[in-house]
Image (tube, rainbow, N blue to C red; front, side):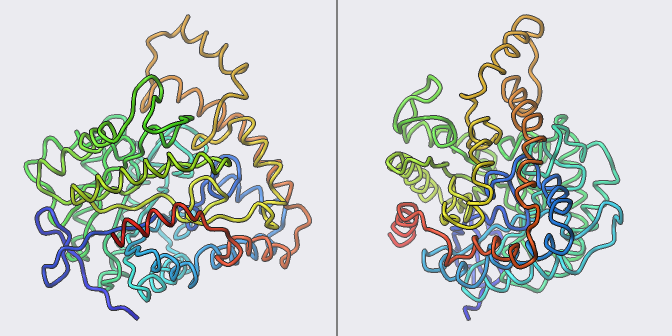
Amino acid sequence: MTTLDFLSVSGTDLVDTAGTPVRLAGVGLGGWMNMENFITGYPGDEGTMRRLLRDRMGSEAYEAFFEAFSRDFFDEADAAHLASLGINSVRIPFNYRHFEDDQAPFELKEEGFARLDRVVRLLGEHGIYSILDLHALPGRQNQHWHSDNPTHIAEFWNQGHFQDRVVHLWEALADRYKDRPEVAGFNPINEPSDPTGEALPAFYERLEGAIRAIDARHILFLDGNKYSTDFSFLDARTEPMANTVYTAHDYALPGITSATAYPGVTRGEYFDRSVVEQTFLRRTEYMRRTGTPIWIGEFGPVYSDDRSQDAWRLQLLRDQLEIYREHGASWALWTYKDIGLQGLVSARADSAYLELVGEVVEKKRRLGVDSWGGSDAGVRDVLDPIDALFDREFPDYRPYPWGRQPHIAVLVRHILFAEPLAGEFADRFRGVDPQRARDLAASFRFDACEERVGLSAVLREHLRG
């Protein structure tokens, strides 16, 4: 077992207790304690998917599936694989629902902590730090599916009740992990999206005080507003918070759109390494101005079924990794495991799970249901008339956070289309008994998955170079 040291902030560096700089090079564990549609194939949001699966499967088979999934999605072999690549940190996203029920607010559930403990321990045994990431908050902190949001409203910022519950949960997490050096720190809110820009800084101040009253040692990793791309809400601060990293997310446009080449033209703009670096510099301006460490909490391209298209996406990834190295930035690549869009390893196409839900996944792709990695090419006959109506009747409509067209895409594709399709997904699980449920979950075991070899090679080359 490798012994890990407490980390802290010293100027622009993360350092261990001897003052030696440590650069975090990691991945996100998306899809495990916070499930996302593109990662495991369901339509819409996690809460709806779970509700429908319990209805179709019955409680016994439902519990059997998710108990096995929790173990099989990340276990000893996964930790060992990450260590073999040279990875030294994992950002662990989790949904508040593992720790608390909406019908019993403030009553924390030990099983959620135990689930998190198991993976923190596994990673620590392999010399890998954990960053604890509350990815889905009660009331939803942003407008999209990854905060387990079935709507497009981020109600968290409008109700003190939700904020009180998050403070209560982080007080419990801080108390549990305050003496655990294998935890690098706490990432209290993933991708906040506060339309006013006023509630977020006030809540960060409150949250810092609550956590520091219990644990003054662990690093706070604080995301920017507007999905961790905007730090203007900090302009009124005279200095950064102590022992704090302000973290940007840095998805490069060619890697997350329907681009066909890099370097090349994406949405009318030529992208090469210099343009990618300019975006990084813009997103990290606050950190460099204040002399604080840089941690890119999420980045990375999505991939297509056509592996011949991987080469230019991997070149984009190489460029980003080199930029981060040149600027001393730590990073966490999104994401470790999925069904083939972005993961380092993925459930096989011929797995029991994908054989069961594959037709729904294909329909989801055809309808462009997923906001992430999906295409609207098959539903332009629906979207074009809506766009034309808005051009005519509401030409100045610019909804927060990304403007009109992404807003319409979420409402139509990701909510309206996803709702009936979620029922079709759940229908596939009718009649599944507990043993069959466990077998389906086993499709995500490391030894049942396939590795995206080219991606692994890029990481190995970079981390050992």
